Length: 628
Image 1 (cartoon, rainbow, N blue to C red):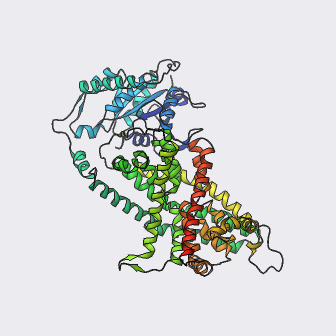
Image 2: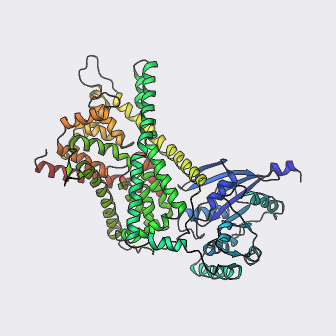
Image 3: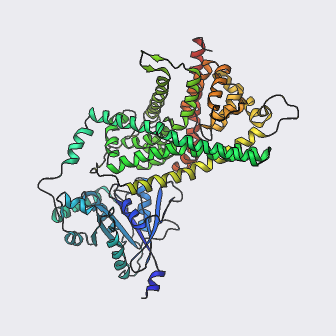
């Protein structure tokens, strides 16, 4: 075979492995920047695909499959991995070779997965990753003996070091050159519990025969765990970590958010200078620029929260956090694995909902999806800040607690408490016959995070957020611009132009429904762009009250509201935004994750009902207290 023949061939590899095995690090080392992230058709599960060239010039396509402990298909991740390996995904070429990535320091569950993979009949190559760490800890692995015991080739790899993937590229050439003729996939039958136990016994036997553990094992992980997993001290450490994370999200992001906001404003000024007044200028400024700007301003907070989450995951702490929270969350009927998606939802419910696929049981996953939007996402912060600054005096309580800060903290607490309450209702009333599965979780060893992998992870997730949320928000902003612009004010009109628009017509039509909770038609109109993104409601309030202004716009809006609203209305407005129905992009993600519109509609209407009820109770109590 000539070099040109080799180069023209496309060889398909699939990476399989348990979570925290270094699979993604190896994928990054092999493909570098030549990778892309998408979703499998029909389900929102990430797929990473990339390409590399072997020393012989062979073109290789590499697919990074979701991490899994088995092929039983208990979660979307496991189903995808199983079906791709079996060649059952429509339009997906079956892999020519499956690379099973194993953490050389923790082989027990991976060897069981390898024995499952052998049943598929696919060509299989086992890669012992992090082999240097195993050697440093005194772990000795007889690679040849393990290969003979498993009946598949076994090689070693150090993915994170420069050149660590070279041996694998060369071995790919050897394997491809000696590939047997393609065969039909083996007939697959669902793995039973008895099969899993048998595989685990065989895996343990292979480990006893081929792996020698040090006489004095590394106790760093156990020493750290003695502190971070303490029933009381561990929760305090978790609370400190979360405090630092949220401080970073709301403090570190501010300069970049202001820079992006100023950039959007400068672009809007350029449009005003070079585009004549009229519909085109209004469309570019208030439709396109405002829509894209609202997404870009939100991006720094998304990047920071993902940075923290990826760092904690790489370090090995996230599994410990889920373990610590299991007892607390279990009291409300939530699975321990729900902690990570709910934590992500404090930045934005979209990545939080997407993260629920780590939960095996569908009903546990569905419950988490339903309550994730109740977490106080950062999109609510501009609204909270505006109303609190306008109506709550900047005084101290007990001499040292800022009243405005206390109200903000209270809004967060109410959001968390309501999420736990809704979970309790779902689990113990709607799903009374449901028996939660025991929380079983492998705690990985602590490892230093790899900056390259963290950087690639943050980049891909930021890009996905912009693609998924940005397009939806942009479309909604264009719609809001249209509703607020047409029909235009008649000649000689004395009222603000928006009073003659479709938005005003809609607001006045719905006003009787919302008057009971203290909302006038202007507030109703401001809720409309809140369906695109909650923070856009701040700008919408400025629009409906005909307020102009640049950097001082927020202050001007607050002054206007304090003169036009009662305190009862302001408190009702805050209560509404604690439970406000989700933005359109979040509802779209719920639809994709649940596979239909049913649970999307249930989420919208139950949150609408909670928002209305909370506002009604708040408004009536405030009026009765003389605040109306």
